[in-house]
Amino acid sequence: MSSSANRLINRPILATIHTAAFRHNLGRIRELAPESKIWAVVKAKSYGHTLEATLKGLESTDGFALLDIADAQWLRDHAWGGRILLLEGLFSPEELELATSLKCDLVVHNQKQVEWLSSYQNYSGHQINIFLKLNSGMNRLGFKSDQYRIAFHRLHSAGYHLHHMTHFANADQVERSPSVGEQMECFEKAIEGLEASSSLGNSAAILWHRNALGDWVRPGIMLYGASPTGVHADIVRSDLQAVMQLRSQIIDIQDLRKGDHVGYGGRYQAPEDMRIGVIACGYADGYPRHAQDGTPVWVDAGDAQGNSLICPIVGQVSMDMLTIDLREAPNAKIGSTVELWGGEVPVDDVAQMSGTIGYELFCALAARVPVLIK
Image (cartoon, rainbow, N blue to C red; front, side, top):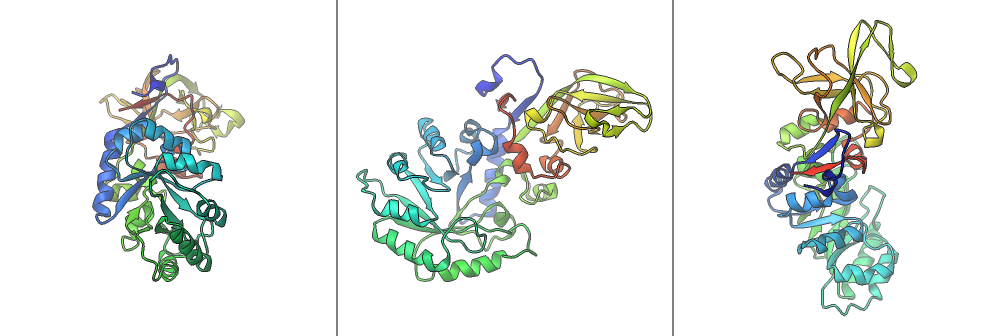
């Protein structure tokens, strides 16, 4: 159990992290990419799922990939002895000693980093692995092709163990440019004659481009049971499981007359006499403020047979509360459990109704929400 779930709590909201789902999803990735090793991407505190849960659920991964060296320190302090990759490399030369002492692998994506490494005197005896990043068309981080080969030779001459790396911009949308094929063509041309292993495939490539994975894949969102496209059907087809379940309760019920308005701005107007449930969850908990009317919420024991029902949001989400239409759940009452996202309500469905993506919802989970690790 996470320490945050032990503190005094007077609100019923709770995020549960299911480590068995982590293990299941990692197993599916091994089935989809059997010839590749796996960097489990755990940046942003494991997309809001906590490093504690990640270490418990993904302990059989080949390595963890992250951004903050403080997270690398946390993993080492908690007995992780496997590989760690700093996805954006170093932000200053002063970090080199710590990164070396933590035995981190480094992504190198700009000339400054090359200069820092070229002049660094490594007395630790630990050989530093460098994942040299090629900008093959995404135009975010990485060297263009002509500079890539120069950087490779310079770092190789300095004694570093090099690997090739690039990142796909549109592995989830084949009609957009640059395509995976275009980026692979650029990548293969840039690395021609430079012997080294490679790291290519992100979640979307693992799902749909298994000819473009490389020796190391870097799954992110699929580890957490959400889709890189935002379409939940992708998750169902791939047999992935939701890791995070966000639940709360109905804390009040209001009886409306036809024509009554709900919430700030009165966005929703009751089309008939009806009941609405007030749920202890709002945008200060990380739920999207822009969730539209109709966004699904699961209500436990919503009818006389004890079945569970999906009830839609009605009205603007506020800081601490949101409201749902209970017309299809006449037996819902104060204290009834609801799920905001998880196994019953896919996070991708909530994200689509909110004009965002599941990644953002996970990462936006607020610190005030207690977390239970199972």
